[in-house]
Amino acid sequence: MGAESESASVSPLEAPASWTAGLVRRTGFAVRASLGRRDGRATFAVVSAAYFLAYAVGLDHLGLRGDAVVGRSLSVDVAVASDPLALLTRRVAPFQYEPVALLTVGPFEYLFAPVNVALGLGLAALVGVTLAVSVVAWRGPAACRIGAGAGAAAGVPGLLSGFACCGPTLLLVIGVQASAGLLAVMQWFLPIAVLGLVSTLLWVGSRVDPAAVD
Amino acid sequence: MDHTRRAALAGIAALGGVGVAGCLGGGGRDSLAGGAVGEAGGSEDGGGSGADDGSRNGPPTVDTAYHVPYEADTLVTKSLSGGVGQDGIPSVDDPTFRPIAEVTYAEGVPVFGVTRNGVTKAYPQHVLSHHEIVNDEFDGEPVAITYCPLTGTAQGFRRGDTTFGVSGRLVNSNLIMYDRGTESWWPQMLATAIDGPMTGATLDEFRVVWTTAEEWAERHPDSLVMTDDTGYVRRYESDPYGSYAPLGGYYARDGTMFTPLTWPEEGHTKSVVIGARTATGAVAFDEETLLADRVLTGTVGEDGASVVAVADPGLSTGYVYRNPDDLTVEADGDGYRVGAEGDRFAADDLPLEPVLAFDAMWFAWAGFYPDTAFVGDHTGAGYGR
Image (cartoon, rainbow over all chains, first blue to last red; front, top):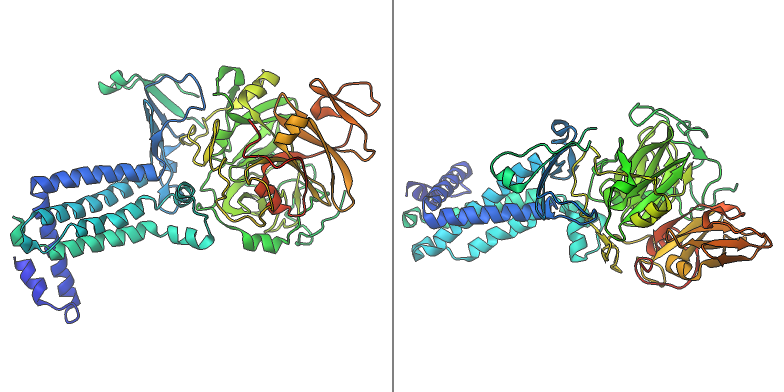
């Protein structure tokens, strides 16, 4: 309640630092409160997991195994790069890094790229927590002053960032012809998405009445 | 490079016991600007010791330039990023092989076959689509086997004591290679440097046969085949662009990913031609037509020099020869009879002067060579397989 009073009473133009600190505290409180509820935790877990999988598919790190070679019958297979420590920070494309291991489980393949796992988990956590706060607020009393649209807004940059690393491949899928300008813009998808997610989270957090979340 | 592979049954893995199942282990240049080749240019005989010696020499070049109907500066201006940085797509510098008889590929899986210096090797398309360049050796001769998925072109080059890498840039959808000795840019299809100290120089190129694994294995049962033990891990059996067996995705679609230098006036963009260029011009033979008709004749260049293309049905490919005397070339079984010669010749061994040729998607050929001659009918994507 204190956070709400502080941020509500301070103008962002008169005292931007104080206003921002209040906004962050208020959002942090909303996040903690949301994750303290069962529906909030469930939303966070499901959305984060789903997003991480979508991110891996978007990178083409996760997918179905091809069938160029006949007769392979291993149900579990792990292949490791020759020098994984040297390769793991090797940049392949903007925000895309070298995989160091390939895990095959039945018909599925997963390329393990540690840096992209870290990026994917970070993005997934941001999307998950934003939607968790949105869902809790949406299910809460009208005093929260927030609707389901906030959740949808949070998902947009998340979806955008899911394809941040595979621009040309994405264009191939949707059949759009690439240009130098479009490719240049696509290189910024991931930072744009992070910025959008953080902004959305702060916006959602600012509209939650902490007293109504409990 | 070692490439460790551990394998176990799922049930064992579930118990935390993932066991180790094994370790797999003459003419002049016409339009291209650039002037004299810098001192960094490679020697005629090239040669060298391997992939990683850090030499600043460029690759070997030849005196006879190919027809290139664009200025180098224009091609550099028209180049764009493919979405990855230099070496973002890593070349394979230490390839490993095993006998092709030990591997069973699915029907129609493409391979790029090379016979050189008494050594026969095949490079699976699905592996090269993830690396595009293999810096290899044939009985001690350093070569680069290169493949561009977006233009459907596989070409071989002598590389001397340098290696080639993927620049990350494209022109006319075609891979721009760079040599690690001089950092000059070499669009693969043109085999001609467009930027850097070797601008205007022409690579020493040799034939790479685009065929299928089963056809290559039947013709060359003792051939080696490159494995996916490249030092890197990729989803090698998943082509990010599409599929050749069956034909699908980018390889079948009429659209292109990038705008070509010039759109062809007619024909499916992804139909396949056997393209050949000389010092004065270029000619494209529709491959599906060639495989059906066995022999096609045409002309190339401003002087209208006669050329003949013959199919090799066993490898589903074709070869191009100069035919200045317009000798009659007729199919006879799997081979050919030429003029009054009584002997029968294999498609790759006619008693005529060969012109280097390779498979290419029609839009890519027409984009680089808008003045190309075309022989045959315009057919659909692929080459009728």
